Length: 76
Image 1 (spheres, rainbow, N blue to C red):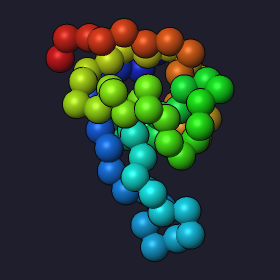
Image 2: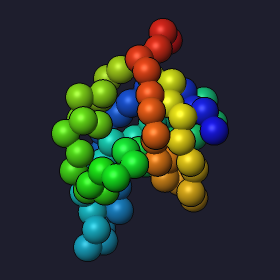
Image 3: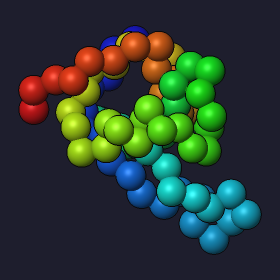
């Protein structure tokens, strides 16, 4: 599946033991936690580099987590 949008960083799991800053994709139909296939689910330097950029990504959506297999920077 393909999703596109702005990559942002915000706190997820507020008030729980798993509260942490996470990288998300803000798409037109909602926000999705971003993961890179094979990447660390809590801290991924590759994803941190995408914050503030618009991307178009291919991957698998599981719940509210989008596991990307590949992506490219995109126009707004």
